[in-house]
Length: 245
Image 1 (cartoon, helix red, strand yellow):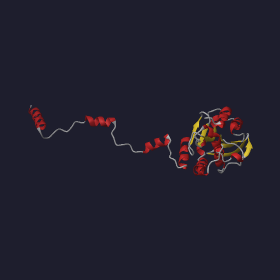
Image 2 (tube, one colour):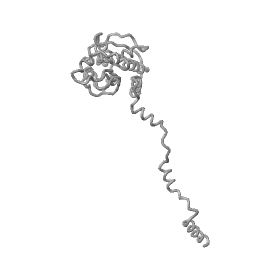
Image 3 (tube, one colour):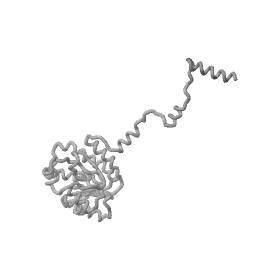
Image 4 (cartoon, helix red, strand yellow):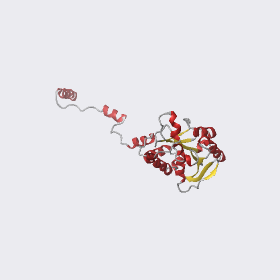
């Protein structure tokens, strides 16, 4: 079983905030066929469904961001799961808008929701971080994260959320690098992970060349003897004398 927890703040006041992009992502997944309507349990809104043949629990903690771990931790213990069975989706100041990154473990980067998850669930869960950009100065951060996405952000936000929902099975199958490619392409970027580079290199024809053994054989081949000139005359005389003897 996999718990996919989107982080955010409950209530209409916060619904369009940058800080609520995690809620938006799990809302997009929940709209896929096969997921139950939202209900309340574990201090969260939850929806049950299946992806890639595995049971999935979507969660939107209703404890407010700073206490997100209380809800996710409660569900984790109820189902006797560990942090390896959790994917947290949340906003990331240190990534440009539309960029996404995924990793296991790591620091909280000052994100209070992540701090709470670390405290209640352990640190070794997967983190799908969605970039919202940095306002440029520390004193502007609060208003930035609790401010709504601008209309122009829809150009990348909606395709990104749709791509997360369309490729959510990759989260279950641990196909993280492939998922990153899908998300990058969805917002007009390029697939830039090492897996893609390696695969591309493998498909490219190698420059024509010889193995070391073939090169050595070629190097040791006797050169053609000259047929004209002083050297040719000398060789003829040498071999003629041997033949005569």
